[in-house]
Length: 110
Image 1: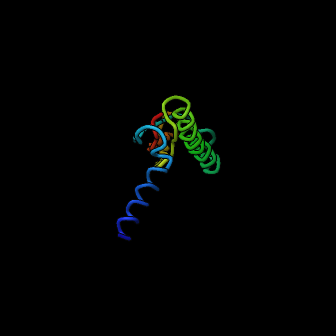
Image 2 (image 1 turned 180 degrees about the vertical axis):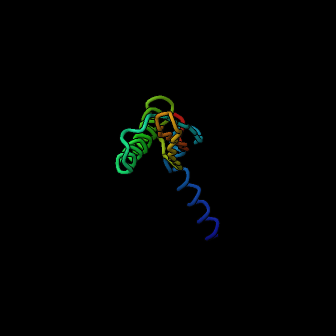
Image 3 (image 1 turned 90 degrees about the vertical axis):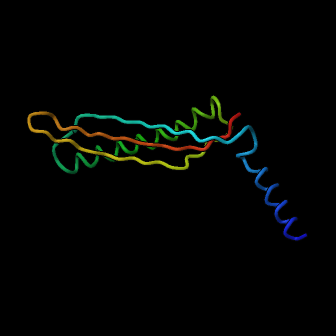
């Protein structure tokens, strides 16, 4: 009896969570990438540029949740984010910084 009551309480608690407040919970995945010329020549300048570009990817992921909530989602939670950078240096061409991000979110559909 205690186990059955505990199971019922767990189900009720799960149903009360925000994920079940609206429609079904779904996964949304999105990817971003940008390639820009390197600003500066020193390691410090390049590192600062990388940090700034990575931060812009994190901010964009947060705005993605805002956009989803403004359109199709009741709730949105970032469950995973991966941001990577790569610098290409080829003789005779300007150096480039490539930044990519993959974001996974769980949303509750309105």
